[in-house]
Structure formats: C-alpha cells, structure tokens
Amino acid sequence: MRFSAFAFAASALVLAACGGEKAASADSAAAPTTDSAAVAAPAPTADAGATATAAPATGQTHEVKMVGDEKGYRFEPADLKVKAGDAVKFTMVSGGPHDVSFDEAAIPAAGKAQLTANIPNPSAPLKSQMLLNPNETITISFANVAPGAYNYHCTPHLAMGMKGVITVE
Image 1 (cartoon, rainbow, N blue to C red):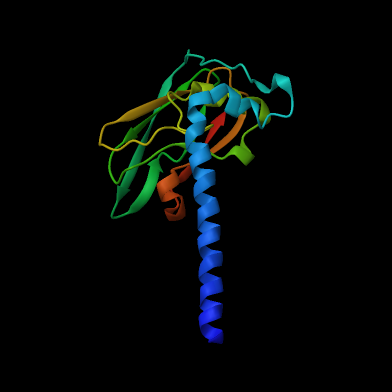
Image 2 (image 1 turned 120 degrees about the horizontal axis):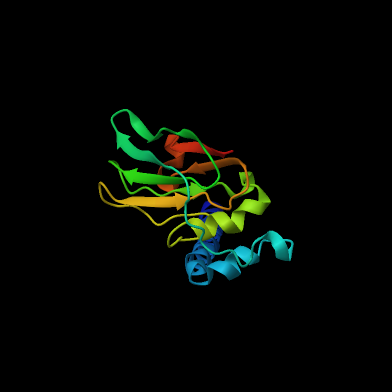
C-alpha cells in the first residue's frame, strides 16, 4: 500500500511538472504574432529597440550549411566573422529539421530587438522558423546589429553539439 501511494504521488508530480511546461510552450508559440511586444517585454529600458524594424543587408552574404549525417550534426562553418551590414544565408543540406536560434543570454542587449527584427518570420524572439527540406534557406541580416559575439544553435540538435558563433565586427 505504501508503494502504491508513493507511485501515485510521484506520477502526479511528474504529470503536474509536464503540464506546466506545455503551458509555457504554448505561450511562447503564440508570441510570434506580436513580435514587437514580445521583444519589448524583456527589455528593461524603452531604448532597447522595442520598435526595431528589419534592416536590409548592405554588405556581403555568407553561407552556412546545416548538415546532419554520419559525421554528426553541425553548421559548416560553425564560427563566422562578418561585418556590420552583412547577411548570413543558412541552407538546410541534410538531417533536418533545423532552425537558427540565438542564445539570448549571450546576445548584447542592444542587439536583441534588431536581430529579432532581421530574422524573416521568426517563430519566437531570436529564433527562425524550422527548415524541413533540403535546399530551403533563411537569410539573416546583421545590419544595425551591435558588434559582438552572437552564439547560436539548432534547437532540435543542440544536445548533439549543433552550435556556432557569428562575430559581428
């Protein structure tokens, strides 16, 4: 009887924890419809770019391939240096689905709103839509983005080490 009560309590706790997680996911999935509001909410000051609009690239476009194969999951190249105004075109090669998700904690505060605005149809702040098929692309402009290191990863394959850094000079 003690074991049954313990098993029941443990199961209820696990279900409650999972249930709360799903509600948070649903909230973040709904966020893309109000990009400027979602970006403005975490900003401690009004000048953090709450009204940022997409800035077109004015420089060079660099290509990064998104690969998943027998060698593992990776961005090629994973680390890239770009100049302010350049763009990065991410191309899904294999092993999808893939996305580009910038690590919010590592992004310079001044760059968060602008970078989100520069991601076409973001699924959430600092996160692209999923690329499902080979040769699908997403091009992200680094125009009007503050200099610094922008750590990024593929959400579905982060645990497999699919990550990189774009350094804006």
